[in-house]
Each structure stands twice: as structure tokens, then as C-alpha cells.
Image (cartoon, rainbow, N blue to C red):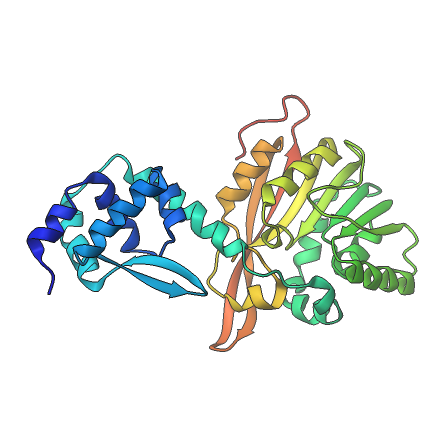
Length: 321
């Protein structure tokens, strides 16, 4: 049974209070707690030892890593005192916790795109339902432009772009995806397309090379989407535009196993901020009808949006609407 006097005494220290608050929500390693609290490891370890003796936290082994978590009594005690407790450090703790959990998720073993390339059209088919390509192409006005398809996969979008653009440069980080895209475009007789292997974070093109750049369902596969957005800003010409399609945040973790997504969707504000930093302005976000995909629990509707943004011809960094 929890010794209430000892437990409350342990919570009297602000750092220990912050630690119990964090551990009531998530299991964390010592180094993660240290990073969030901004304290030395020895100090954090000493505080955790006090909390453990007080019965407020315990250690657990998850996926081979030792993590701390609040005990059942610890969570109950925090829940009872939380309404009366405030601390100016709580908001920054929450931000750093969010960063820690996101980085932990992106550190999962990567899915080999080469391994799934042969089945990619089947996996990605639902994301290229009727209307998606057409909605993007409405933004290609006038026609006869030089455009890029970044993260082209097997060329589903590239083939459509080839019909309206003067020249299309398509890239993908997977060698097998590139081979399949080249074969698909060869069979279609698309002579105005070049497909090569390259990462979205380091595009093999000159500054301002394109009138427009498309990236459909790409950014959530990248550890740092902002790096790719910076490259799009570099390679699209002043006054040119990018058109992106992404999933809203969702909880369907099976998609990570199937497609290798680093993020379970991307918040609009994340893209808005990344586009602003990359020098885009006048971004427009529009919702699509949800995609419906199968899961172990049945059919799941995934909300999707499209955004097109203009490369600011003057200052490169304006507020995005």
C-alpha cells in the first residue's frame, strides 16, 4: 500500500513532480527523461530512485529497453493532484516529449522499398483513386511546363503528368521502383519523361529547374519531411508551385508495416510551417473524400488533403494562408 506521506514528500521536488507527470502518460528511458527535463543524468537517476522507493514509479522492459513508468498508485496520486498543480515548465516538457516519441517511432526498422516494389501498385492503389490525379492537374495551368514527380514510385502519377507536361523528371529512392516506372512509361510510349534514382532530400536538379513539382504520398515516408520541402523550394523556379497530397494524422499502424511510412499521417500545420520555411506562400489546403482501406478490424476511412503552394518570387518567406 502506498505511503501517502512519503509519496507526497517525494512530489515536493519540482523535478520529481514533472517526472511523475510525464511517466503517468508514457514509458520513458532515463536518457529520454533527461532530455525532456533538461537535467544531468546523475541528477535524474537520483530523483527516479527517490520516486521508486516512494512507490510512484517502476521500471519495465519493453523491446529490450528498460523504461520507467508511473505505478498504478503513482498515476492515481498524480490524477488527484493534477487539477491543483501548475508549472511553467509543463508546456515545454510536452513539446520535448512529443519530439522524443516521434523520434522513437521513426527509429523503427525501415521497410525495404525494393522488397515491396513488385506489389506497390496494389498497396498504393487506394491512394490513387479517381479524382486525385485530376485534381492535381487542374493546377497545371498553363500546360506545356517542365515538372517533376518526386517519390514517383512505379510511375502512377508520372504517366498522367507525361500527357500534359512538355517534360517530366521523375525520381524515387528505390532502384526497383525506378526500374518498374521506366518499364511502365516505355510501354506507354512516354518519350518526354526521365526517371532516375534519387532521394527527395537531395534532388539532382539545378536551382529553379521546374515550373511545378508534385509529391504524392511522399513526405510521411521521410524521417525529416522538412528537408524534402527545402529541396522542393530550391528546385522550383520563382513563382512556380508545388502540389502535395498527404494523409491526415491517423492511428492505422498497419500502414507503417506495409508501406514503410515514418509518420502516421502529417498534420496540416506541419506542412504549413515547412512550406513557409522553404520559401512558399499562398498555400491552399483542400480535403479529399476519405480513402477506404482494409485492416484487420475492417474497412478504415483515412482522411486526405491536397495542398498547392507558390514559390514566393520576392522574399521567399511570406505567411501562408
